[in-house]
Image (cartoon, rainbow, N blue to C red; front, side, top):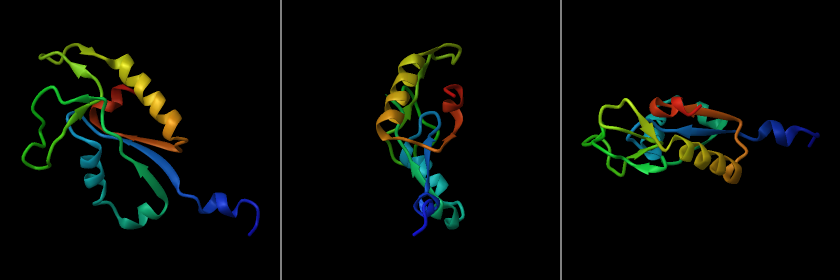
Length: 113
């Protein structure tokens, strides 16, 4: 085996962060509809948000709980809390589970990065 062959064969690791009041397993289910050949090239990691959902999820009745949020909002969705805690949690996660080659984010998590 030539030098670098192992590196070329290794899958790229992608951190996949779910949307508001869903879960890592829900995002994994959503992405399972992609062309299967994509998964030959990527190793996808699907953590759950740091906080339990603070209200009704739009996927209730479609996908089973639990549901999570990366950070939290007030009832009017005009102010958020716990964003710094979320960023710290994600930094620790990336440090302990990484390295990652890329990031896929959906919905609420777009505010984090």
